[in-house]
Amino acid sequence: MPHTITLIPGDGIGPEVSSAVVRIIEATGVDIRWETHYAGAQALEKFGSTLPEELLESIKRNRVALKGPITTPVGKGFTSVNVGLRKALDLYANLRPVRALPGVPARYPELDLVVVRENTEDLYAGIEHVVVPGVVESIKVITEKASTRIARYAFEFARREGRKKVTAVHKANIMKLSDGLFLECFRKVAADYPEIAAEDKIVDNACMQLVMRPEQFDVMLLENLYGDIVSDLCAGLIGGLGLVPGANIGELGAVFEAVHGSAPDIAGQGIANPTALLQSGILMLRHLGERDAAERIEKAMLKVYTDGQVRTRDVGGNSHTDEFAQAVIQGMG
Ligand code: NAI
Image (cartoon, rainbow, N blue to C red; front, side, top):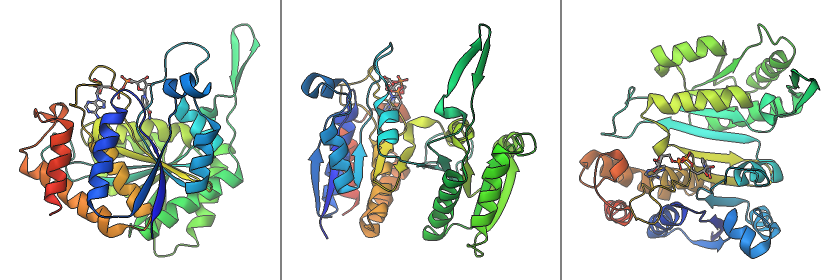
């Protein structure tokens, strides 16, 4: 079955890494038609909006997008395109697999876990106001609907990927109502998945356990703010944010992107590492049901890392983006 996918090349190193990833995906022979759209400053010039309606319509129609990083200029009047996309499409699940790559220095080279973060509510929604000068109130909203759908997403993901355990991370001992509701929804959903172990941990303990014995975790389920913090902690366990993929998924569509930004310091030099976006592309192919292609790319990419001959500068080599892409394509045979 042919797929039509919205491609957002992004800016900075975005176009360099996305063209490398498109080349690699096309080399698998999967039948994909790319619909290219622009967002951010590039789109503002052309369409008068950083998040043009055409782009949103394209994602809603195709239901899948691959997205390069987009610069968010510092200053007022320019909100993050990334946050805007999540809101406009109600991309409620943020998925971040955390796994070290062969030969890349990591504290836990064997680690293989997945963080599932609720993407729409909680303190992270930033609902704040000044009550009186010197007193600020920030409102934490947790709903049964959002907690239930993210828990279901985590268990469905675990079932589909053959994962054995989901751990809910919370602070329900103190936030008895809000985190208590999140936990209650988790337990209700868990009952529908008897083959998957369900446990919960208080967030402070979970952080300590992650640093000391991370291998005990498999799929981790968190509210928005804890998820934001803990997912970066997890990336640190395997060598940092640079290589980690991500996906934002909702009923209307799914946007696959690297976790890193547009790297203006190295943009245009052809030396960016496309690995994070490539790993996002692998997630995307699995999401599309193209498991064979996903596995072929993954195997070839891991082989390039194991061989260690072709590496970009950020991971200790001097190869260019294109050379890395070529090595992965050759590795697929
Ligand atoms: P960054 O991730 O762009 O760069 C941090 C450092 O990592 C830089 O030294 C950069 O050269 C390096 N780096 C990042 N990706 C790399 C890659 N693929 N290969 C080799 N080196 C890489 O973070 P920074 O500088 O904080 O943000 C730059 C811009 O990106 C900002 O405007 C920010 O708002 C935006 N951003 C966009 C994101 C997105 O579109 N999802 C996510 C994070 C930041």
